[in-house]
Length: 110
Length: 113
Picture 1 (cartoon, chains in turn orange, cyan):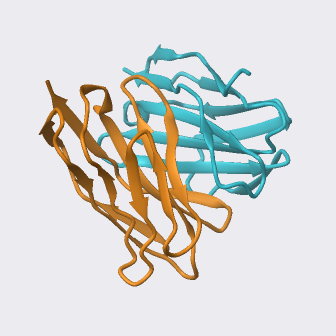
Picture 2 (cartoon, each protein chain N blue to C red; picture 1 turned 60 degrees about the vertical axis):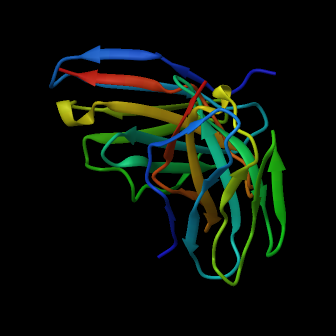
């Protein structure tokens, strides 16, 4: 069945470091892909999305490119901030519902 | 605009009691989703509705769980009887039918003693 696999955390980085969170997916067809973010004590919110191969989603300095050949959608940011500390979920949309990965907790140290 | 509203935000109850969680989706959204989040299992989809009709309840863990959506602006998730292993954060989310993006509520943190 359709699934999403993302790197396990926690990931701890210093402020201004480069961030990569890996995500790969298994799906029939070409699903839409997403990154959602969950800040402490809150629900998930959409960070960025891409709907077809080679699309790049971007928001708040974060980017991810839909790679059909490697079935990947890695999240990147060039210079992280303390305020980026959160849990990040990779997800795909299939058959009317969104399938989420297990989440990666990110800690940014000042 | 108001986002998805959930109540209560926190619930502490004793094993065997009935628990009812409530959700008001964003106005105009006709798809509604109930999720459960735990450290062990991550985020799990329990059930979702389109136009108030349950479409997929394969994630509902047992008969102790039931969900209803009597109208477009209200849904409930009921656990009867509750057990300690039901302790989790329960999220409600809504979207326009067929749309990619879901909007999540703040969640209800349930503790069953």
